[in-house]
Amino acid sequence: MSESKSLLILLVAYAFCSSTLLILNKVALQTINSGTFLLLLQCVFTCMALGTLDHFGFTSAISPLEAAERERFTVVVALFVTTLFANMKCLQLANVDTVICIRMTCPLLVSLLDYLFLGRELPTRTSTLALVATCVSFASFLLVEQNSSWITIFWLSFWYCAMVFETVFVKFVVSDSSLSTAAQSFYQNLLAIPVLTVIWFSTEIPTSVFEQISLSTSEFSLVLSTCILGLGMSYLSFAVRERVSATSFSMLGNTCKLITILTNYLLWEKHATGVGTFAVLFCLASSTFYRQA
Image (spheres, rainbow, N blue to C red):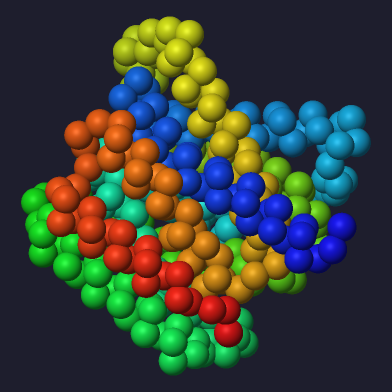
């Protein structure tokens, strides 16, 4: 298979997982009112799935984690857990459109960090205008949808900062790592499990979480679907990061959100107003003009 075709398959698979996981997590949080516990389930499922596939030889070998890799992955896991935990908080406090729209501005800052720390060229004039237009659209969205509490704004800001640095640092780790894609995904989730467990026990009462859960067949299928998509996102994010720049990876995540917006709009009333939705769509339109430097 040619390089371009294999990359296309990776991008399509990642786009599917990215465009559906956000909305399914939002729905799943209505069933399991604990973002930390849902993340913990997804990490455990990913480790079990990758470990099983490795045992039967379906993935590239998961080699032992050496000291140098262990140090770098400690930071990766810290950023991974922080980003996902903050994202779950954002989904609990804000509608999906708000989360998507603030994510749109991420590539502008990532492109600068790409240039400063990863040796990439600065974006072209067209790409820069596309990034600026995305930020202007986000500002318009905030003017229309300015109904967030300070707690919501705090978690959105915290998640945004964590996401930017996670995008750049993980690209740095992937570029220098000798581990296979499966191994990187496996260790990221494995090392995240004890951290998430501590956070869960520190911030919630586990017994109360279990008491609130009464999964029907449809609800169980929903939670299982988020675990499967989480597995796909974890593996494919490392695979795609090996092939594209950090800024391009961030822009890919943005363009994947069109399906998310449409699904969210049709699914329920927990979305932005018509003008707000238009601002989000303009963000997406602007992002299509970005080209990797």
